[in-house]
Image 1 (tube, rainbow, N blue to C red):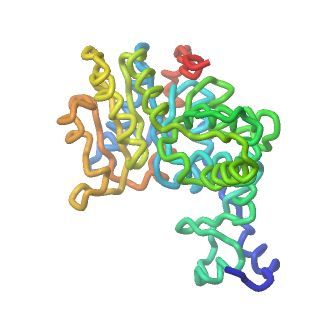
Image 2 (image 1 turned 135 degrees about the horizontal axis):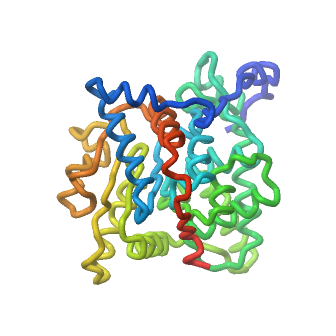
Length: 350
């Protein structure tokens, strides 16, 4: 579809206020979490979820997975997630491609998300090449730069099958050499050997770049790389088998949630009957179960599938962007992460 020339003045006006990501080190949420623990409803749920996350950090045997779906990274939680990696508060990440590629890698390349101070007609936004996530804007031209950068990375790699973890590691390496943001989750995960898995990796800007890589290669009669989702499942299950005790901090649901939980079942299929269910689990979501949302299952329901422990779990029904800063700031300031051994699970695949 072709549009008339972009109104640069109007576009600059709409993309004038950057989203500022919350710094969980700059404030101490412990007093408010303690107070919430004496309340009821969602406040008390959040306080209990925060205690469970602190218990994961205090458990020296526990490997912690950060599991992300939804758009909290674009909305201002990106630096919070980055701090969890930098401080050794998570050991592995399972996320949507949008979270990793369209949001974090996007900012790692120097691009920004913007607050929508007004929301005009979406056809008007399209004519200006502005993409909208609720009340957050992205410059489509910047996003196309992400597509092309993924293409460029693919063109430099040996044409073979890669798990999403292996390809995302190459993205982290690229940001170390060419990135423009220190606080990138992809970059920090590369530097700290924290593996990132995106089970639906091509459902993102990565997909556009990789399709172009394959099409160009096919036209030229040369081999091309592919993303092996089975390798993703195998590698993540291998980590679960070797990790033993595990805990889940889950934002949203969907594929990332099911993917990490299914490692327990996969381990059993592979003959590891002694692999324990995930000992700790926290899920923050606004989805309900009645219409098949929330991945159609609460954590209690997931226990019937042999995936999580029913004793140390907590659902928090809240918009994650409003509670993640509190939960993570509390955990950061309680300091159970200090002296915690970094697992460096990415080294398992070198």
